[in-house]
Length: 287
Image 1 (cartoon, rainbow, N blue to C red):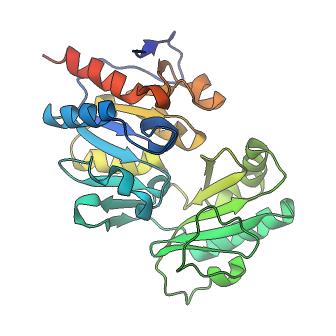
Image 2 (cartoon, one colour):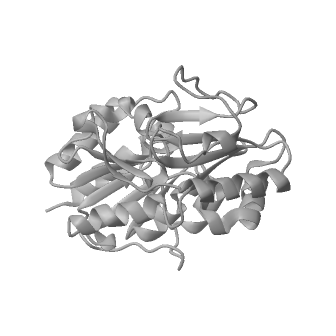
């Protein structure tokens, strides 16, 4: 069994001695194995944490409709943070939206125009509370029979009746992922929060101030939980703010180089139940 290991501390992230009250974990590349399943060991660790009085929040870039994989493993409050912080959903109540932090259509349109001009060949998709809608040349990563297919300008029209925009996605077929992210932030960063979690050049854009960290902070404040009482796990750039906010932050062994460079603690890869290994250590150390 591979256990979590501690690295030399740096100023970028801190580790506290507060007793954990909440575990915040990303899903893909972190809690989930590569086949998108939750291992028996992880299921047991999550249940044991909740039984010990430690709340667990799934904090993911996934849309609410992709949460079935963990629906049976959320206990207590039943809440999950999805779409990189744009929505909070109640998995015990059929995925009901508890909180929505939208990207305003005018800001999304400004992003589309700026990125299209700076990176010809980019295509876009619009994630709304009702589902995803995309441009004709946007790769159908996962088909949706209810999706509208049209130019982004039309998909973002103010009279759209598909619910608020929670995330804009931008794909480029040629640029390297981090190069595309840096370029898009440079030309349109004033209009939203840009990040990525895919191995491809697929960017995720949320409303200004919206991130996993800011929504998690709101959820914790509602419960009287301080950052020092939070243990967070992640593997990709969209986890960086959350890992920096939490009192204790773990990067997965398989994490993106930037995540590995800015966290102080490591755990085993997602394929080796790295999150479960840390939870087991936490529970072992409780009085």
